[in-house]
Amino acid sequence: MPTYTTPIRDMQFVYNELLNPEEIQALPGYEECSPDMIAAVLEAAGSFCEEKVQPLNRIGDEEQCSFDEGIVKAPPGFKAVYDEYCGLGLNNITSPTEYGGQGMPIVLGTMVEEIVSATCPAFGTYPGLTHGAMNAIEASASEELKNIYLPKMTTGQWSGTMCLTEPHCGTDLGMCRTKAEPNDDGSWKLSGQKIFISSGDHDLAENIIHLVLARTPGAPEGIKGISLFLVPKIQVKNDGNIGDPNGVTCGAIEHKMGYHGSTTCVINFDDAEGYMVGTQHKGMKAMFIMMNTARLGVAIQGLGAGEAARQGSVEYAKDRIQGRALTGAKNPDKPADPLTVHPDVRRMLLTQRAITEGNRAFAYWVSTELDHANKNPDEKRRQQADDFVSLMTPITKAFMTDMGSELANMGVQIYGGHGYIREWGMEQIVRDVRISQIYEGTNGVQALDLVGRKLGMHMGRYLRGFFHPVDAYLEETKENEALAPFHGALAKSFGRLQRATGFIVQKGMADPNEAGAASSDYLRLFALVTLAYLWMRMAEISMAKLGQGDDLFYQAKIDTARFYFERILPDSGALFGKILAGGESMMNFNDDAF
Image (cartoon, rainbow, N blue to C red; front, side, top):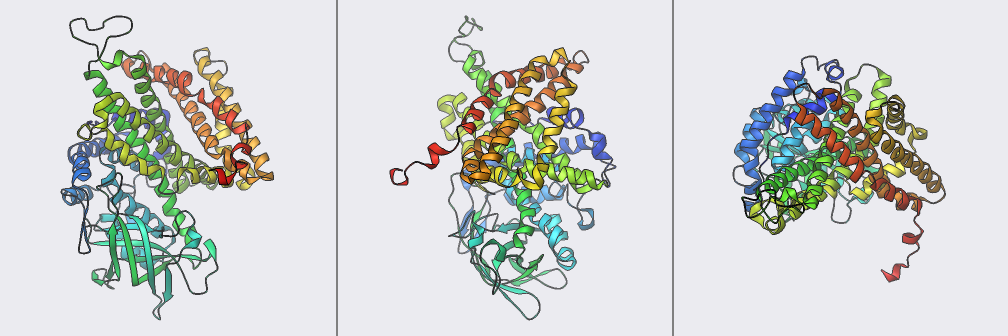
């Protein structure tokens, strides 16, 4: 089985050296969140997840969830570890202090989420969905609902879900048929069926709080007629304790390709009592708060999968001896050399490293901006940060999950035949991470969101949060000879991104299919340029640190940056060419010939 060690040194490099921890600590409520405190939390979370959460990964995959006479149970061991996880407060690191949370920075929550995703992603769905539901409740629900539900969700005593998908509607939520009828006391009765509900039912928490999209009587057709409701599995009394069952039942659990330790349920609502969250017919606005949280969380699942695959690949490649180096035996006293001598294995190992460490920097950057969007006292700075997060959310979700899947498949390739065998564990990463490219909006939908909504919003204002810093950095470093190999490549790929943006905006105005045809290639181009910008900055930082006592680490950063620029960033040229080719070849193909 691949083993995982929390990459605390690299996490601290990104947070302490690439980003600006002083700016985060200066935000209201984060004054005590020093780098030392961040390090202590990472050490504790890493130790717990390595010792307690990681063993659940194989157990969950083999034993799976059970469904018997309407009762759903998580795999053996999950309940005990969940209770301990919540007891340590790892589930509520970023939750508001007024409801019992710790109120720490979102970027720290992202770091812990990465650790959980790398050790047992199926386990992480239970607290992860709860956290997203809490965000939506806090942002949109009444004070009464907040005070009743958030404290127990914060402790983990109650968990949460979001219920969107129905048998006939997935991405197109305007087709929702679940009905909500008003009661005389201000509550609502909900009836309908939802499918693919992650953590929809289980035995880890005392109660499960569902956030449900439904249609009220006389509601407008389509997405404009959708409202959001809070529906507890078990009714809650006025004193905050649970009462009678609430007409919420699990009809089945899905038998999936992966994530076997996470329950995915068919949930039936039969006159279940619920409470409106936010304003009638504005349910999607409230739900998007949870969905955007979930999309960033899913991006971290891709990052965690990539790191787990990378560590397993490195361990195997160093230990497995097969064949001889092309230039002659490296270990003449042994019958063969380790896999690490072979160029193609090194290509895959370095690709795993370059993408994973680049994605880590990307994820933490977005998370710190989310902290600014929520906490910065300067309104202009909050808006800039919110624009940046809005732009980058679909990119992080799609690119990091695509890469998590690709890097896990590279892990199988490095393992060879052993990679295809269950007991070695690498194939489980492939199966588990595959769903991340699908749920919370497929990656194709993320690409459409990027080109169809984000590029044109507020006359292109969102783009400034990325284009301006990159342009300024290129100007700042143009005379730095040590950075010259990076500077030229970044400038060229950034120019391609700018030209591709103009091309898509121009063509898309005349024919939306042109923008749609370019969308996935454009999203990946954007991501590759983003990682190039971050890798150049990390290389610059590392160059300045050589000779100060940690040369192996910093030289590896510089060498990985060089590999990224020489072997991965050139893909930006092919993507640019595909974008400029337009959509005629795909859109004019005869439907009957498919």
